[in-house]
Length: 237
Ligand SMILES: Nc1ncnc2c1ncn2[C@@H]1O[C@H](COP(=O)(O)OP(=O)(O)OP(=O)(O)O)[C@@H](O)[C@H]1O
Ligand SMILES: [Mg+2]
Image (cartoon, rainbow, N blue to C red; front, top):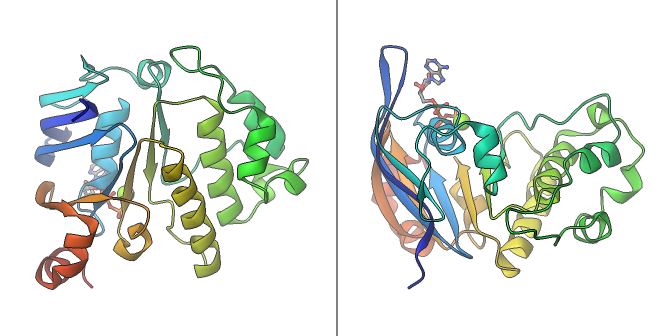
């Protein structure tokens, strides 16, 4: 087995005096797409933020590519090859789609240059006709695609996607799903936080379920799908 790209070990995270994460642990290996599933307020985004350097754990460790990166700043994590697409997507609304992409262009930590603009438009054919449009005028789904495309422009080693299907129409969700399957097919390493398990079927190979700030279940996504009890208890479906 290959060593993990990301390993979160037993982390506690607080916002002020309130503890949000309790000993959270998970691992993602090279080429794996892992789903972090849980209901509203379960602690998915906080886990993502702790990995991306936006919420320092008070206990436990985050290892990335074999190095302890616990509490590193977001720009340090980005430079080491971690791309985070937050829930609110954060595109530059007044810049065009193409400028949003170009601003994000950089080589990977090992000089990787796998995502020239031409390839981005091949993988995201819906973005090319929109390239001159201000990003703030895109639909939610288009902005989500732009946010993922922008993350890839930085040639990351790993992608963290926080609820990419949230608030989008079913047809757009299906398109984003196709795109993430494509990324899986080319061996991308991805951690995807979702409430929607169905969205993750066919995208993620494995899943961890978080509830009230604790990991309560780990399995293959097929195993989770077959486990009605866990689904109804922690995922409200
Ligand atoms: N900045 C903050 N200050 C205090 N509490 C916070 C803060 N951000 C989140 N929380 C609390 O932490 C808990 C976990 O929130 P988090 O955003 O990690 O959940 P989530 O699983 O991402 O939920 P959602 O599906 O709604 O995005 C919630 O109870 C939330 O109210
Ligand atoms: Mg969230």
